[in-house]
Image (cartoon, rainbow, N blue to C red; front, side):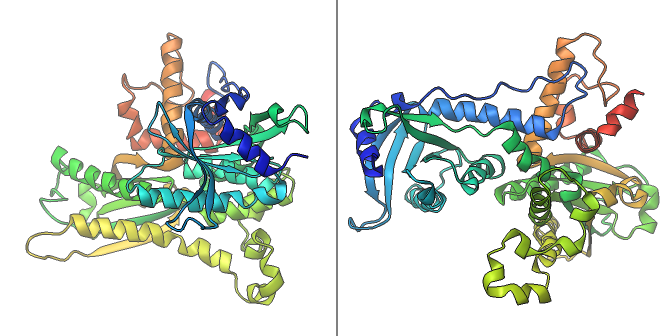
Length: 454
């Protein structure tokens, strides 16, 4: 039986041509939607996105040359923290960290080591972007936690990662070493993405501020283009902060109708929504426990099922009684809104600063996206301005918009399943609050499309 050290030495010996050891990647073909787009779902859109991304990663990995082996990652040459290989692309601005684990028992350590190496490299080269550093894992990929970690890194962290399974045509001959790309199946992706992108997972915070004549509010008339531009700048700044913090969601501003100013002391609003990881984690656990066969939303959202010991059973060993006395997971779910609140409050305060040091009155509320849309007072008696999407939500929305326009261009007289018609240019959709709301209904409620076409 060949050892991990022998494999490492063999790969390093062929450092200039090591990518020739990599088999052709068997990446699924993109899902082809029906001509009328009636079968479009978040799962299928995300899967197409991930497979396209993996194709680019696969192409880039094959441009990487190995530049170091057993590299200590600090000044002490005897450090036990060593990268199995370091690499650099000859065609792209890519620095690669390659970790080799031959056994399933050791492959579980790979992610902690890759994280440590990645942090070291970003410290050595400050301001690197996510696409600068590639994590390449050579391992059996037999542990479920390893496979799920790769998928989460691709889908939610949106960092380039690639897995290769080592195998031999002759177990006793190192010269027969091959590396097979591990590509997650559509079923593996569905188990994760299908749980995450759902309307019940969006937490929402509304930040409202007072009536301010001339700057935000124009008495007895609709907001001018200048005022609308100011509101949109607020949304852009907020979205930039959300993106930097890794939040997957959307933000937009609104203003109540001018004739209702007297009834609303806080007529100016910013609405921030994002996917709450604690409800997603609870839902993911619930569906796994039911073998993916039961999708009972009322049960998944039942606070009695919110138990952190379900998701992290290791806590039962040392702290079972603690978690019987207090529901930390439910509390985390409720408190997660504070991320959105702090971002929104900080932005509203900043944009309302003036040279006189004036203070403004601010109000806020927390709810779900679903409940917000059902409130006429909140969502209808107002003008909604540009919406800005972030993270996974942005990627899905942009991909679906592209699919819509490609279908329209392909088929003259194409009847869109949701919109009565679409603008000539996609830019008019990408920031349109009404189109985005219909997009979410389309993704979350298949019956919406059916009723539209009956």
